[in-house]
Length: 112
Length: 115
Image (cartoon, rainbow over all chains, first blue to last red; front, side):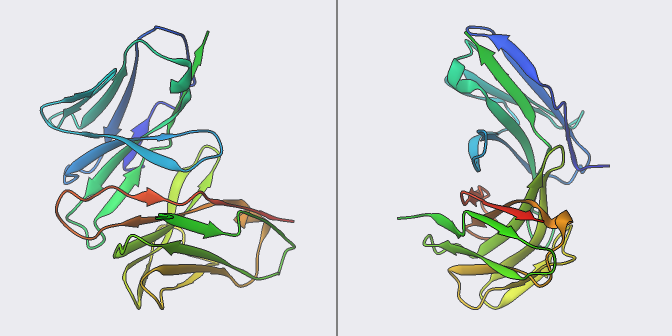
């Protein structure tokens, strides 16, 4: 079983829509969580960190539920430029490496 | 600052050929990683390094070797390429252990095809 599981999608939504992605992680020792964005044929880039209290960055809201080992990303008022693959990431500081575990990604297409 | 760079950007090999992928960073980061990304598989860790002169195996190390002779460079070698190694290879760096500096910075990737 993968450390981080995501719904691969694809999600196809119109401009202006609200879309939510979910992610679960299996290692309860995971201590930090992130959402990365990856555009087609490009490298992943950090979108936002996820904090226990939930955090918001403009149109993006991330939530963490440690009891359920569940992470979410909400995108409001979707833009065409939001089309990308979104990677859910868990960080395990307890391991010797301090590894990041990447989900397989959720593909989003926003259409006009 | 260039950040993380990878060379080459593209390469086509024949089965059995060898090659080395170079990752270079100018951010003075301690940790460096090599991943491969295949459709439907996500990012899989090949090898990593926690500092100059140290390397270790990740999830999928077979068929690859690495070296970190200088802090700023992390080399990934394929001694005898196989079609199963056709993939996009990403290098990434991280500041170091602990703290909140957990972000990994990725290079632009190397697209490798093995015929």
